[in-house]
Amino acid sequence: MTGHLSISDALKGVTVGKIWFDEPMSRHASLKLGGKVDALVTAESEEQIEKVVRRLREKNIPFLPVGNLTNILVRDGGYRGVLLSMRGLDQATCSSGESGQYFMDAQAGAALGRIVGLAAEEELTGLEFCTGIPGSVGGAVWMNAGAYGTEIKDVVVSVTVMDGEGKKKTLRREEIAFAYRKSNLPDDVVICGARFVLQKGNPPQIRARMAEIMKWRQEKHPLQYPSAGSVFKNQSGLPAGKLIEEMGLKGRRLGDVQVSKKHANFIVNKGQGTASDMEKLIRLIQEKVKKERGLDLETEIVIIGESL
Image 1 (cartoon, one colour):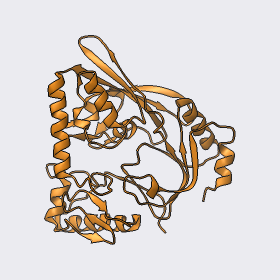
Image 2 (cartoon, helix red, strand yellow):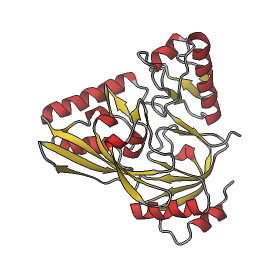
Image 3 (cartoon, one colour):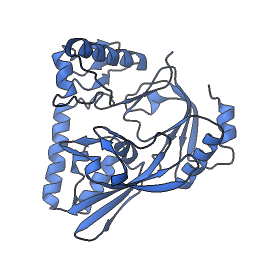
């Protein structure tokens, strides 16, 4: 373990929102399962983030910035280090630019649902595709989240990041290589926020599109059970869910973890699921797809920590 004392010592005198030690991720992650992290730290400002990051770097304590914990699986043995929650950095504002453009500046911890709603209130279009995605701005930018033919890269103008010394810089869209469900942002930076470009839209059309997307999600996705959203990245021209279904694995269950009967690219927790069972089920799917189709299914979710 990294240990309470070393983390407490590293953060001595630093103001943060809250620190939980030996905190089970089952209390926080959307999957409602996962091992303990040495410490879960919530920050409420960029100044707090800067101080925490600098201290942890100085003491060589591993850390990982996280948002709403909707796309992460912490193994049952837990995570040795600090999960740095960005949820307190949740501000978003809109402004107008030239040539009929409008901008939204959103901090990393702002929920996608919130910025979609704010855009609609301001009668701005461009973010409707994020309707129903449960993550936050930081995670969405990091993995180039997308749906319905649109991705974050299509609307992002710039991304503000912080390096290990707490120094901030703004990267223009052209400086970031976005690809399908990933970006080339360095592993050692913390995303602080992003600017999105939007257009003035027709309010009834914006609301109708949002309602249409939410209805589709409710019909297609197993929202009644805890999950981490889509588990695997789609193959070129072949949705991962369809591929898994063709393998006969829809509904496959290990303990209380199950490939959803509603959408095969979701793995749901039916009650007392464990991270171990989920990881085993992921590997089973990957091995079967590799054996029968020769394809490598990559996970969209992030798996961290140690096994028991």
